[in-house]
Image: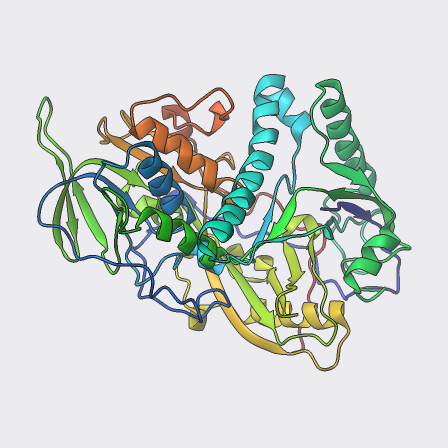
Length: 509
């Protein structure tokens, strides 16, 4: 991953609209509904063959653990819990018809760590020990998923289309020198470069692994083949570039399916049951000092369970209104295959745009630009493609065409996904006991703020350990654990506090 601080040169680059104004809203009062009907409009879901995955109807008798949510968080948790105790009767329930039907199967397919590490800032906010845990957790999570994919391919032949990506870059489009050409200046490149270098100094002082290195930006342009004057790379504008060495591309739906196939294998003593098309409508908790089980009221009928794990991300507040997770919609599109097939990925403009070319088919995936939507699509929990914001879709298409500079490329498919955001930007992981009305055997793994791919797998392992009665381990970031203070934090302004350094708007009227 490369981070580049970019200067603007008058006369070049896109036309920038009047100053960016983030639309703030009272996110805490946003009504979060249950997930809508299944759609397979994403690049990852439209041809997903899950015929080998056995599904089940709602069991008549009670179970040990109900995992609500069939995405990467839910099946990571179920898989780790099944490995810990194969005798447990575990069911994964999802409102939709297949695995990864929510945000997991609707993202950009990038698996990389520390997009914005800010490890030196974490040390100041927490302490050096916690900063180390947070930094190393993302790296360990990415490597753990890569290892899982490689082992699965060797044992079963199932390919999650994981590819090591040595050409993964992050460019940060920063404007210096005050407003120019109707630009709003949100930061300056010198500040960003200083933050990056402070991070490296901190890593060196702690004798930690350094997974970034400074490179010449010409190498970035050569690797991607992007236009010289593209929003990603312009050699005359760049003042710094860093490359992350821990980066992969993966098909997220196939990755989740691989986890489900292992957890649900009929060869197991007590295979995990996957129950699709099952919306959890409400939770009835045992009375105080009662030995009764939880009772889930679902669209298929009641289900009794000893423990509940909420892996519900953007839809968490529909069942747990006292745990504020704010839905934020993101849009993505994929191109037709390019003539020249490469493998590269770029995250730009402080993460508000990202793009990758997939080596397996030459297609390009691009997403982001939610700042073009009213309220930055904060509070929007609908992900059907037909409901996507047309201005964002057109913006992404023009952005892709300008970057690739290819006449033959066109949009093949467009879709939306809904992320779950928390007040402090960290996921909720752990026991819910004492949070609102929650009881002792309720747990959560949700609110990944757009970084689920680099955090869900080992967060699921942590929750599985807790549900099994164990500790999470010394390497897990304690700042991710659920506390009353975190649950009570105001989410006003979530998703709109941070502005893109540049707001691209080439849209024709």
